[in-house]
Image (tube, rainbow, N blue to C red; front, side):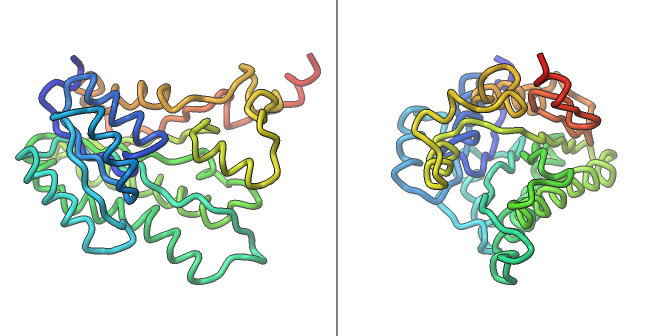
Amino acid sequence: MRLNGKVIIVTGGTSGIGRAISERCVAEGARVLVQGIERADGEAVVKKLGAAAALHLDDLADTASAGRTVAAAMAAFGRIDAVVNNAAVVARSNLASTTADFFDRMMAVNVRAPLLLIQAAFAQLKANEGCVLNVGSINAHSGQANLLDYSMSKGALQTLSRNLANAHGTDRVRVNHLNVGWVLTAREYAHQIEHGMAADWPQTVPPQFAPSGRLIMPEEIAAAAVYWLGDESRPVSGAVVELEQFSVIGRNPCKNSAK
């Protein structure tokens, strides 16, 4: 088991990518504090995972949530070896539609909450030579026109990962970062339906978005996460890894679509 004995906090662990990471971590021998906001979803995850998981419900927009989350992990398992900052608000906006309140909520959950959780857990991470894995998005590089605030928040999260890796390497606390592409979660499926897509839209994604013929699955992100959470990736820190189906930099999808 690649994570045997480790205690890992996973935010947004009650659904989608976070749930897949929580399940895979337990399968690899870890104990997991599953953070979320939906009780029914959280209880279902913890019931499935058994004694190796504990549920903590909290709103990450609340600045006091970081301390409560760390306290919950310590109460449940007595230590913290890793933090996975996966939770995020994903909502559309552009220059015309964004507002100060919308921006503040996006940054509070997507950037400030990860920072404060790392800060609150840092004493444990340092004592245990632990690690942080921040789950970002390829939108960090510039993003879509209708994901202005979200893209800005993911750019900031990427900088947070690199900054902390540089600042705390000598503390032997590693900080790495995943920029994920288009992933087929239940929330993403419903989101696309809400915006007018047909019920079978995952089977008709254009090749420029899914050259393999399908979208990435949450379990595939979770498989990658295990490497960065485990000792196999030690001592690497500050890595930003693109988990996408194509090269983000220098990509020219027209060359592929001509085939």
